[in-house]
Structures are given as structure tokens and as C-alpha cells.
Image (cartoon, rainbow, N blue to C red; front, side, top):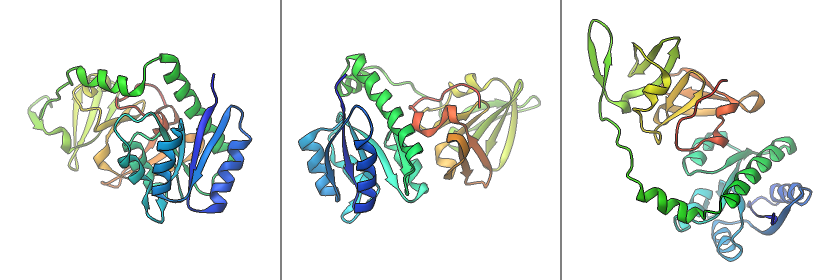
Length: 258
């Protein structure tokens, strides 16, 4: 297996040196370049075409997100965001970053994130399908359409709700509690069957019993053992368990246990 080529982009020399030191001590890693600005990072990516970029969110001439926007769709490069502010985490996952690191970077967390990224990239290499081709194939497949309104059977009555108004869904034995604009509707059903009616680009499963609307999340806070506290805009606090952790999110909701 060829080495993992890595670029480090951070405008703070101490932070950049720390990442470079950790990477130099990691087996199977080849550091191809380092940079300290958005413009230099874009140039370095085009020149070296690294497998992985440790990308600072805030740099003198812009944000790390500007780097991603400047690259052509389907570019064969992965990103791990590095930031001192955890509120950037959700934005990082929205642009399909593999993971993110909080400054000051701790070695244990760094090693976990690097190992996860390595496994993801090796899986893609082993599949034999170039990401650009994979993206093209996905676009050739008709996209699923999701209903604009859902009919909730409440027993004595039924109500229509717009999926966009749903903040979260939680299972309770054979029932589901649907949180909609401050109200809770209880219906019979399973989380899996209900999730099939929701757009997986908008709704994410965060643990065994709960699905959340990404638009309903106010902030995320790293918690213990790779978990996250999810603070919703309605002030409820949920737990994003390790098995469903953001670093392992794909576009579709997952199943499992916390």
C-alpha cells in the first residue's frame, strides 16, 4: 500500500509544527507540503494532489471552507479541519470533511482521527473506483423523492406535517415521538420505517433511538469517549453516540445502538 500523502495548512507556526511532528512520527505517512494561507493551500493541493489535508478553518486570507469551494467537484482529496472553535464542526461535516481536531491538538485524538482517515482512504483505494467516477455513477442513478408532507395517524385524528418542521424523532418501544415546532406527536411505528420517508441529506441518526434535523441543531460540543452533546434550537440536549459519531457520517441515516 503506497504511503498516505498529507498536506498541513495552518497559519499558526506552532500549531503547524505540532501537526508536522505528529505526522512525521506516524508510520506510512508522507508529508508532501505545508502552507499558511488559503491561496497557498489551493496551489499546494493542485501541485501535490495529497490524499489528506489537515486544514485550518481560519487563515489570514479566508477560511478553510474557501479552499474546498475553489477545488473542482469530485477532487480526489480528503480534509480534516483544525480549529480552536468547536462550533465549526457541523459546517465541516456539511462539506463532507472526514473529521475535525480542536486546538490545542492532543496526540491521542490526533492518532484516532488519522487512523480513521487512513482506513477510509484505503477502503476507497481498494474499491478500485475513482471518487470522480463514483460521483458520476451516483448522478446517473435517479434520486429518491421524499414527500413534501407526512400524514401522522394520532388515533382519534390525523395531521399533516412538513418534514422541514420536524426537529427530531425518537423511538419509545413501538411508538415514535415526533417533535414539530414545539409540539410532540406520538404515533405507532419504527424509527427505520419513518426514516425512510425523510431526506437523508437533512435528517441524521445520532443514536439508537433518535434522528435529528440538521437545521434544528444550534451547536455541538465534544463529550466523553468520542461522543457529542447536540444542543437543539429548542434548547433540548441530545447525545450523538460514538457509533454514530460525526466523523463517520455518510449522507444516509444509520442504525445501531449507543
